[in-house]
Amino acid sequence: MTKKVVIDCDVGVDDALALILAFHSPELEVKAVTGVNGNVPLDTVFTNIQKMLSFIQPACKPLIARGANQPLKGETIHAHSVHGQDGLGGAKIQCEDGKTWWQNYPRHASELILEMAHQHPDEITLVAVGPLTNLALALKQDPAGMKKLKELVIMGGAVRTRGNVTPYAEFNIYSDPVAAKIVFESGIPITLVPLDVTHQVFLTPRWMEEKAKPLNTPFSNFLIEATGYDIETHRFRNRDTIFLHDPLAVAAVIEPTLVKMERLSLQVEIQDGEYYGKISEVKKGPEIDVCLGVDAERFLELFVSGLR
Ligand code: BDR
Ligand code: CA
Image (tube, rainbow, N blue to C red; front, side, top):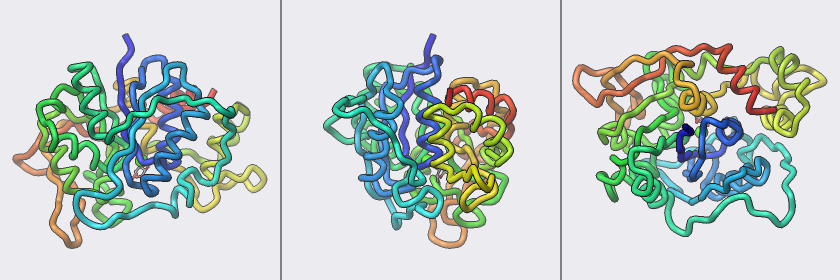
């Protein structure tokens, strides 16, 4: 039995890698891909979704929709320094001319998410790997409809570890904490994939040499380009390692035994100040399954299988 998924993303290099993994996994049936402002502005996110689908050429064309172009509250932040101006690390993508590999949904991403939930009650896993604005908007519109989702798997937060935007907050949650609070308090079953666990899965120059380079497929070559790996100097452009945040969220759906979870009561800080966007463990609050451990080796095997 395949799992029906909808992916809400802000493509983004690791979002792009998550899409490759998802569409190449026979365990998943990706019904729709929705875009949200995040790593790059919404227009770029939406272009990147189309670019990635033209590259992947999925057998079943997913619906795609544009979502929120700003957070519910607060200023928009982007992560061009990590993902490049185009959000794909400047990687060139070979696309076949004149073919479309998706179906355009004419309305907002939040409506597409709701339509999927209504059409396939208790069957859809929504994998959210960007800021949670689209999900919060859908919840405001039709909370009962959203409850028809089977589960949410969310990449976001830093629970017992340092943040990556501030010492306390992680990018996806920091970008729209009000949306995160609405989603956390929705009562929909949530699996959270925070930095605590995504920082355990990363690519090193050695891995690139031993596993990625020898593959020499369009997808392994995309990985090399998008991550800025220099095959001459054996180094990444501006970092020592590349974290696979979003692919891990997809992997947790494909193979839940890869991760170790603890059920925690969590709260999101939405007040301005030093702790803005921080997730804290509290005595009483929404209960969320939080991934804290991962079999990194087995995950990387799964990840590389998606590049073949
Ligand atoms: C998350 O933020 C984005 O930069 C990545 O795509 C990932 O979803 C990691 O903090
Ligand atoms: Ca992302």
